[in-house]
Amino acid sequence: MEQKKLAIIATKGSLDWAYPPFILASTASALGYETQIFFTFYGLQLLKKKLALEVTPLGNPGMPMPMGMEKWFPVLGMTLPGMQGMMTAMMKKKMKDKGVASIEELRDLCLEAEVKLIACQMTVDLFDMDKTDFIADLEYAGAAAFFEFAGESDICLYI
Image (cartoon, rainbow, N blue to C red; front, top):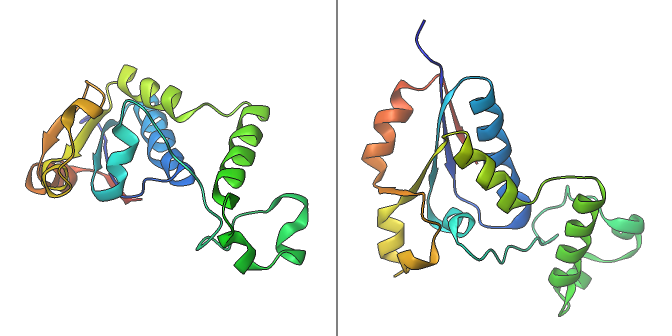
């Protein structure tokens, strides 16, 4: 029986969007899937050695707010200086309190599980990114190389 394959395209670079690709990839790998994540555009932020990921409630109406803030605090209030930092700190604390692994831990787990992490070479070039800012265990490739794997995968997810 041929090994099942999971292909993930990660395009977001915020704290809340960092979890799905790493959780899904590490789980799939544990279940025996050959797994690749293709990081493009803002998703490349997830591959940096020093992560500075934040979460914002703006543009994310489904985000549960602490203390029922969504009922009494206007959306416009979320644009106030310092709100994004405050919301990021609150989210990180909640995750730590609930025992959720950090992004760094999940990323390391993926690497240990032999999930292939691929940085989009075109995006790295487009944004003049410095490869020394990224973790060491990456491959750099274009979309065509990823499509070869994705075209054969059993599951392909766009995150």
